[in-house]
Length: 147
Length: 141
Image (cartoon, rainbow over all chains, first blue to last red; front, side):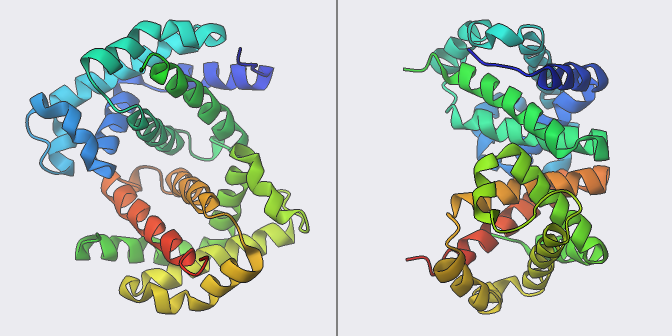
């Protein structure tokens, strides 16, 4: 089981209580699609992803970005059992969506950079470490049910 | 592959950051040490605590090297030749760590530049840092 220090728990709760899900989610997903364009392969039905501006303004990207952040919320509220929290979603991403689990890390890195821009200097090295540890557990749980 | 537009963006960003090279470099290093503690093993002979002269000097060197390289990306192998030799034969830092520092550099840039660190700038910078790291490791074997 994952051990969380008080600092880590507090940091995660604090970050997620401060960020706007419908701003950060869309920004993180859009950034992933721009910085790692091959991730667009999973979003063939999303319409115009032709350039950065199109991706940023794409309503399906925004909606899905928000969905993803709300999905993360489940881990925020269940930090002591993230593995089981995401068992179903892991199966979904593997069996139905056929997403290469390496992509989870790409999105996690983009989310880190978006949150960094939101929090500025408050996103210290220690805060970043806690946030990255949290995302690493999420990423690992999402990849768990692949076979 | 970097477009001309992306190369210009990269040069602009490093020009903007050269006056605060110490600050940005030290910030990126501290983030790496906090997030990836294994990276600290290469610095056991230095004081890498926040604000230490060693940390600031190292941070400054790294950012200035990144800035210098950005002025002519097609010539990276020439510009970085001395650093290639140093890293391959003397420092022998496992190249996986270059990725870790690159990531932390991007986070440092994002914290510093906030909304100015757009997705397009991020993409360009990520590509540049990857190219830089690859060239740095070229003489390893």
